[in-house]
Image (cartoon, rainbow, N blue to C red; front, side):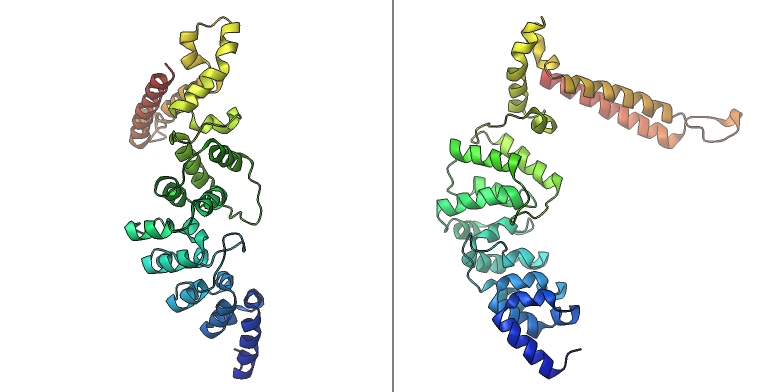
Length: 305
């Protein structure tokens, strides 16, 4: 535990350079006095504070008080606040007023009302569009992308569409990368594909395979493979289901999986031959899975026929 004199010296140094907080031990990073000094000098210092202080309203508000122009810093103090504070309307409004990037870290638990939307739209369209491009790379879930696309004054153009898809396909880890989950990224891609205002501008089939069930993705595949199908003699009306070999292969794998599950359901409940019967647990699993598998086949055929 630092002495009072040591605390004063550390506080003085943090008042000149808040990023020094990252080099201090856990005791100092849990000291509210020192963290306040660091956040007063640089709001980004909040990321190195103890978790308990990231949930402290005074500390977070102090970190948010520093103006942070859109592209002037990699980080955003609001990003490092606890989930409970990021779900607080007052905290978000204060963060948004100081740093437009705050929208990219808005909590999915925050109830977005008219006042919040007005605050977000107080930024000009160029700023909001830049946020959308950055959000494609760093958003952890769909919430900020959905708000920016459906609740702001951004007008989707061909250029914006092209940049969105380019960002999704070619973004490389850099200063804005947050290592968000693959699931969160897939949710964003699916949302973009289902928004018909966003022009379709993807040319890599492998990139689209997970989203084969979306109507215009299906249409893209059919158009791409139509010439090839005609050359090998398949009638065009059959292209809907046979144009994409991966999907046929996938259905065959489903058939094999269903057969394997049915075999598993015969696992004996006893080593004695006379008492062998269907294992009730696996039997129930078998019936449910077969039902789901057959329904998958029905849906797939409806889509591709």
